[in-house]
Length: 331
Image (cartoon, rainbow, N blue to C red; front, top):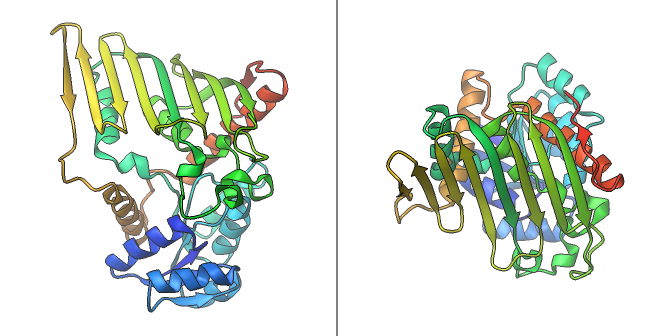
């Protein structure tokens, strides 16, 4: 199997190295010669191209779209048109317009198309979902979640103001760092409506929003809040679920899942093994994608799920433009 990696930044390089460890040949595409050179040093022996069409013509059966957000949709459309299965990093697009065409094209070509969702392969978050499905806290009622990290700490080896997250023209902004919306809807189902306020605080010298605060109403009746930001020091990622019969808390930083049972009047705590390497979730994500390609199976995060996340984010933008008033999420 041969894979085209579109976008040779940090996440594209990670996927390339993981795919190579799974015996997949690598073709790397990036229009930036400096990134191609850096990629060549990290992934020696990979073929390199400066045009997407050239890479798609090299006999690749799969593609990983890891370019800046602005290019995700057009590169997915190109891969689908070429009959190449693809995994696209989140978000699927920067707006919902154009996604229906991609869905139709992928369906017409019978392609496996998956949106990146590495956290779903983390053992603690997967365990949380399993406990919810088993009814261990009864009916979920409420959720409070936070996902924040100081943007200059993301890639300390480069000027954060040049990263895609900092630049509106590349589809940046904290709203589009949509991991948290994706896994909350995986845990609790689709969102019916959302209220949102955003801010560009001015502390980071960037032109994208660096703070977003959401109130979420899920179709299941669960109510929740989500704060996303580029400001927190230290990094925080946490989900607190309240149910009829207990509480679940996942703390990614502490690498711990906690369960409170009212019957026992006690907390139980679970952690992955001390030897657990975070890259493991990326490897398992890629193994899942490759297995879906080989078997023609439905991926854990299909395009329809990516489309729903984008609909939530579009509703967030509409709400923010109206001062935080709730907006319905398109079905």
